[in-house]
Image (cartoon, rainbow over all chains, first blue to last red; front, side, top):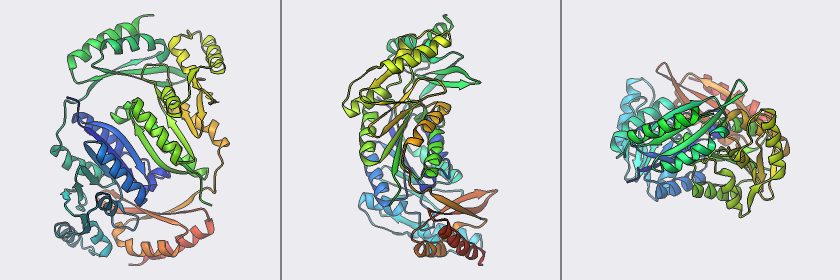
Length: 241
Length: 241
């Protein structure tokens, strides 16, 4: 049975403008791979209602699980929760349990729990909260979509809250052979090996270091014995002149 | 007149599996912002014909310019060129000018110009080549889609080849105010300022450092005098208790 599929929607003008370099995609990709879930597509969209809603609708229909990052804070440009609610055609309002969590937190910090901060307790109808041990303001899950913060430490904490609730498949294992030759030298035998081991996937990732061409050959699959067998043949091929 | 729009398609299982952290998106985002072109959407898709073709079709129809990265090398998993051709319904074959470039390069390197490397001369009918001073194998432009390599140094060289051919708008300028307070403290006046300066865009990007909440408030626009005026008001607001 193929592994479950996942997609991610990164929401934020700051990524698209180049101001901020996203790190959540790479983090989530590794977590999902270890959990046996195939991250299959990522979209980065602007802080724009139509763009957010279109991405939510398309991705939640196409994949088993969807993760979003960004746009759930207290400021006017935090529009994710409202647009997730709109995408699913449900209402959204301040919810008592989320408001109580935040009220207690800001009281403990001697900070005002003002109207802006109360916006973070706006949760779409029917959603369940995602625990945020870092900064309390919760994420939420609605249908198959997990809505999470963009700040990396908070995003990671929310992933840790959600991951145990997901059913994973067999973890995707990989082995890597680093070659100090251009991938063109090995492309033909690599392709033949990929046909022989059709249950595995073979990737070639070129690099240029100090002006010289090299590549990393990566074998991926779920059966460690098959990967070992393929790596053994690949190593011999790579040593051939 | 609004700035031209652009989109990017990152092609590669290695990004989605978490093996490689993409850096081309962040690089391109900055280049486009400086050039007055709005990067509006990014999609990361797998090495999968249907996924690549769907993304090419959707993005080339929706945006002024599209950039792709990845999947144009000599190995069996390099399937971008064939699927770009298929997306546009044109043929693809080894083209003389691309083959000649590569033949000369490999001769100069005393490397065999074998069948795998000749694959890199496969160019969709009607495309124009994108110069690659780093490793010679060209990218190509077809319709409004620029197809480029995934290796960062090659990607960057190809961006440098393409960028002067694009018509940009007014460069998007920004100023940043770093605040050592939670964004909830400033959210309401920030929102009012965003309404007052409706020709600018205002973003708030929270961070947590040493356990304390802070945020970067960013004002973006094309008119430096307006940004100065907004920053002056923003600084006063931020100093208020």
